[in-house]
Every structure is written in structure tokens, then in C-alpha cells.
Length: 202
Image (cartoon, rainbow, N blue to C red; front, side, top):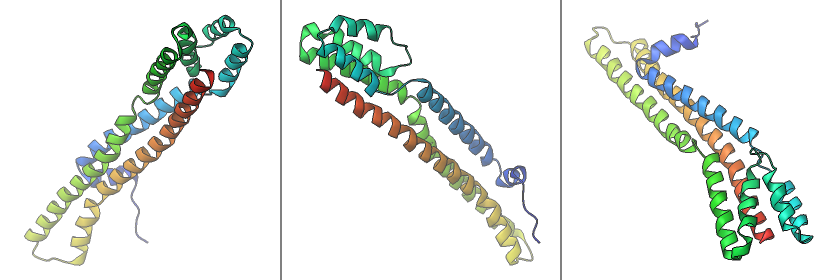
């Protein structure tokens, strides 16, 4: 039975480009974990606070609504958006909407911090893998060129080693893309609910 390879052995077979892919994989995992912790720690629910503030407004208790939002924890993301809306109530609907939307955009920017790195890594990692493969193929054909006895095993072995970087590059890209899409879906949901909350309260 053919002997398998450990990850360390595969890493060594991949050549110098594997170090770059290792750095990309560490960066991808670090960004995903940091963003997950950020989004979990910050309460992105909109409905509970929106309904509470709406009930205050319906009872003509705008000042109580402001005081309620001021007492909310910093991790309750929607609180600052609704607070900006209510504090600009005296300036009219347009000012209210613009103030709330500006605060919402700032909150969304903080939530999406690091997402651009994930999209970049999903593109750079496979390209680095392909570059490693091409470099490995050059080495393999060079070995074939100087070999006196060329056989299928020599050719297949060189190509096999060269393709390792492509596999690792594609794995990193897949993980980065899946993580990005799952995270951005949560942010998009918050953005849609926030927009509806602003319109409802105005």
C-alpha cells in the first residue's frame, strides 16, 4: 500500500511558496475568528430596541426614549443609531434620517472591518498556489531535461509535487470566500433591519 504524507511532509514538498500560503492561511483564520467574536459580542438585534423606542414615541415620551437609549450598553449596536435619530427630532424628518443613516453607516463600517482582506486573500491565495505550481513544473521539466532515463514515475512525481501549492491555495480561497459570505449576510441583515427601523420611527 502506498505510504501517505503528513501535513509537514506535504508542506516541504510544496517548496518555498508554501511559506506564503502558510502566512495567508494564518491571516484568514485570524480575521475570521476576530470578526466572529466582534459580531457575536456586539448585539446586532434590531427589533427589541426598535419596539421599545416605538412604544415610548406612541405614548409621547420622547425624552424617556432618549434616556432609555443612553442607558443601553455600548455593545447594543442599534442603540446609537436610534439615539442619533431621536436627538435630531427637533430639526425635522430629513435631519433625523440623515443623522441616523450616518450613524448606521459608521456602525456598518466597523462591522465590515477586515472583510476587504478576506476578499483579497481569496484571490491572492490561489494565484500564489498557481505560481508555486508553475515554478514546480519548471523544476520538474528541468529534471526531465537532464535525466538520461525518463520514465512515467519521474514525470508524475514532479507534477505531483508541483500541484500541492495549488491545492493549498484553493483551500485557503474556499475558506475565505465561505467565511466572507456568511459574515456579510449577517451584516446585510442588520443593515436592512436598521433601515426599516429608521423609516418606522420617523
